[in-house]
Each structure stands twice: as C-alpha cells, then as structure tokens.
Image 1 (tube, rainbow, N blue to C red):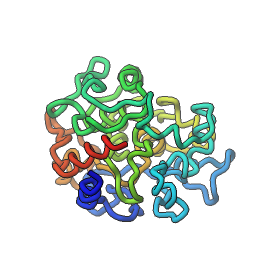
Image 2: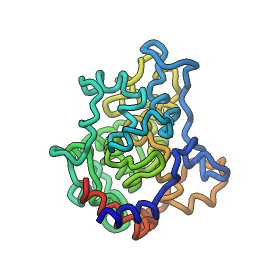
Image 3: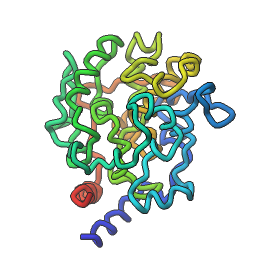
Length: 302
C-alpha cells in the first residue's frame, strides 16, 4: 500500500517546489486576472493591515522553516503564514491551532454527494453529471456544508449575482477545506486540488451590488481578518481577491478558471470574465485516473 501511494505520488507531483506565481499570471490568460491587494512595505500590523496578502500571495511554502511541518503532515497556510495573526482570534475566538486543521479527526466530513444539493436559493447549478463529483472522498472541514448553501442563497440575493457555475459552487460549499493539513504533502504537491480564487472573482464580478460596494462584510467578512481602514482602502476588485484568498483558496497550486472552462482560453487577455453556456462545465473530466486512485488511497490512509 505504501509503495503504491509513493508511486502514484510521483505520477501526480504538481511541481516539486512551490510556485512563485498563480496559474493565471501567464501570457494569454483568458481574461483580466484578479486584482492584487495593496501590499504593505513592512510586515503587517494591526494598524497597517495586509495579513491576508502576506499569508497567501507572499507566503512561500518552500521556506526551510516549514520542512518539519510538512514531514509531520501538519503544514497549513493559516497556521504557518501570518494571515492567522488576526483571523483566528477575531473570527473564531481561538488561538492558531494545528490539530484543528487535521480534517481526518472526528467532527469533519468525508465529502460525498450528500454535501451538494446543486441548488442555491432559486438557482439550480448547471453541473456536468453529479455536482462536484471530483471532490467525493476528499476531506471537508466541519459539517456545515449544507449551511453554506443557505448562506450563499442569501449572499447571492443581496449581491444581485448572476448564475452560479459549478466550479465556483464547489469551492464555496467546500470553504475552509483548502486549509486541511491532510492536503499538503510537500511544498509542491497536494492530495487533492481546489479551484483557484480566479474562479471566485469571476463569479463576484457578476454581482451588481458587490461590484459597486465591495465585499467587506461577505461571509464572516474580510474586516474580521484585516483592519477596517485597510479593507476600505481597497477597490471592490481588490476586496474580491482578499475574500477569495482567505475563504476560498490561498494556495498557488490550484485549478484556474481556464482549467474548468478551457473554451475561455480562446478569448483575448483583455476580455472580461465570460459566462460559459449551460452545460459547458467540465469538472472532473480533466482529472487523471491515476490522480483519482491516489486521492482515494491517500484519503483511506489519513
């Protein structure tokens, strides 16, 4: 069993080192990439803000000080990067805690079809086959995924948002699972991948209210993780990025919008975020058989 896991691990390495940029920061990206929030010139403080940026965009998982954490299977961005300095105490009223993010512990969920109703408010998500099937058997954080449907039904209504696409739907329902220590095998390898935040930003751009006013209070609010003055100094587009980085995926090893909707790669880089036609989602079609087997075996082990 161990030999099989190691072999499949070698077949599915997504870069041995942690990348310096996100997948969408490449020539020919299909549409305007997420806006980078303001980066304070010095390490963030409660006055300057910038915790989310330092804890995601500027966090380098190749840092040798993290080697022991990877060896123990305990690495997670929230604990080892400075994002957690304010986020944990203010949002969860607890200090940073590694065991909290071991998603194989009781109280968490092994993801299955039951977690995805495919309905957000009055919208039925256009899924290819069973919604979010590529995540079945992975580990979820907590057991509140059905509550996330209710939360986004309210937020989509308030935001006057457009149609949910499957990739965005999956990432919103699975929120916080991206921080499970069980995902991080090496700096450049994950047991399973989550959508990049450009998927979230593409959706938020369809929300008339949020495009105008920003998303400082969306979910538990990015103002819980950053000083209010810092958040308000960011444009709505920058706030979309902050929201995506802390709630959806801070990891640079991820699946971008173009991965799920490859037809968008034919659009010029200056084009605005497109909405694929109904039924065009390709979730699960790109995952290799070897990756699926590896993920299954790994999840049995943890």
